[in-house]
Amino acid sequence: MGQIDYWDSVAEEKNFTTPFQSEIFENYVSKDAIIVDIGCGYGRTLNELYELGYKNLIGMDYSGEMIKRGEHLYPYINFIKSDATQINMDDNSVDSVILLGVLTCTVSSNDQRNLILEINRILRPNGIVYINDFLVNDDERNVDRYNSFKDKYGVYGAFELPGGGVFRHQTQEWIDELLSIYEKKQYEVLTYITMNGHTSKGFYYIGCKKSCSD
Image (tube, helix red, strand yellow):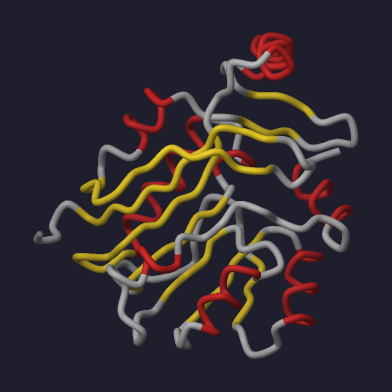
């Protein structure tokens, strides 16, 4: 089962749980900003932004079934079915990009890097990127599965779920390297509850193009 097939199959049953730091986000992004949520799923974060007064919202996801769910739940939000790592938007065309739990669904380091570069391409000067994702854990359950799938996927932190789907928890070193093209504004390590009810180390990150001013 491929990644798209997995997400299509669970689109109606999975509810995402990582919290969006809306109060912090509001300090960096104005209400009239054009915001793109890449890997938006069924649009729960976009709806949260809508309720805060943001109206120029675009949600992109490669799962057609997730898009359908989002359109049903939140018909006032613009949803687009999109490729995983290529964004069909002009250079310097959006004010902010949100990426919640998308790196964890993108196992390949090259694909992650290409996605981050694409985000940088479409962001305007001073544009803000907001990322939530998961870090590697050191408990026995996670270490065992990281080691079990390291050779198969060529990266420590990757694993498969019994019901299908491949995921990756990130090392801190990799996150530092991956996001080095941005100017870091805020970063915090937190504990999240996963969509399957487990706890995991995670983080939120706010950065902007390095052309931005303080």
